[in-house]
Amino acid sequence: MIGISKLYLGTVEPSDPLRYARQAKHLPSHLLQFSADKKPVVVWNVTPACNLKCQHCYAVTTDTTCDMLDHAAGLRLIDDLAEFGCPVLLFSGGEPMTRKDLPDLIAHAVGRGMRAVISTNGMLLTPELAARYKELGLSYVGISLDGLRETHDRFRRQEGAFDSALAAVRLCRSIGLKVGLRFTIFKENAGDIPGIFKLMADEGVPRICFYHLVYSGRGAELASKDLNHAETRAVVDQIIEGAMDLHRQGLPAEVLTVDNHCDGPYLYLRMLREKNPKAEGVLELLKMNGGNSTGVGIGCISWDGTVYPDQFWRNQPLGNVRERPFSQIWSDRSHPLLGKLKEKKLHVTGRCARCKFLDICGGNFRARAEAATGDLWAPDPACYLTDEEIGLV
Image (cartoon, rainbow, N blue to C red):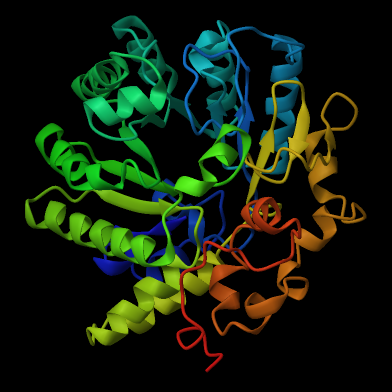
């Protein structure tokens, strides 16, 4: 996760995370990515049930439920995560709001001292639910909006999906529940990015995450529609400039990119070209961030209790919380994959292994490398930096 607004616009300085000794339990949410202890943010797919069948769904969700962790098992899971020190629990799916005990699970997570957030398509959010979430102390609602009306509805395979998502954004804004957008980028929706920034300005949306496509689940079918390197560079520049425009308009929105960690070096190199005096401070923050955190600072638990290194890497199970607590699974360095992920800079190969930005990229996205090449330690094909830029020429 690369905080474009934090880094390029200087809304965070290196001294800010240092003020809290870079300890996750003390850091405000906007500084968590700079923590030194890297306790995992956990994505819990609480259900496979969903009211949509989106083209890019990494979880390949259904309209039915299966052998999900029941309520009691969910409470035990939350207790273990809290005692382990996980700072954030992200409720995802499927569509998490199809799970009727979701408010009680949120309440338990908040009561145990974790930040609780939801990733949703927004279509099931009602005024009553929104008010309850706010009362329970929900920290954030991330609503997927993968383009303007026509694009989003086609991508989500549901007419009216855009209007429902926008209504959910407005509902959260109206009651003071923090909300933001989630936008997965590929060829057919990249042209909508300027319109999304305009929508943010018009609606006063305070946050957006732009996700680079990962070839997982149904997303594997979109691999041929991923941006090429030149297109990706152009889109990242467009996102940087969109963040600047929002700030010029008096809306200091948080703008982030996710799942392509060469965005960090790219941003730094742009600042060097521009002779930006904040460039070296940004490099320091990128080193604190550490790049890809799969198997270290991000983890996933599926609806059936299976633990994965991240939410996209669903062919690499690490264990199941029905058999061992998450804290034990996550700490077990004897696992042949998890142990290596905790020191993955020693195992990446090719240009990744020789890249001068390895410490701030972390080898980029292993799930995408495996999906594209069959070798999980191979270079991520979505890295768009040139050999010259990464110090090989």
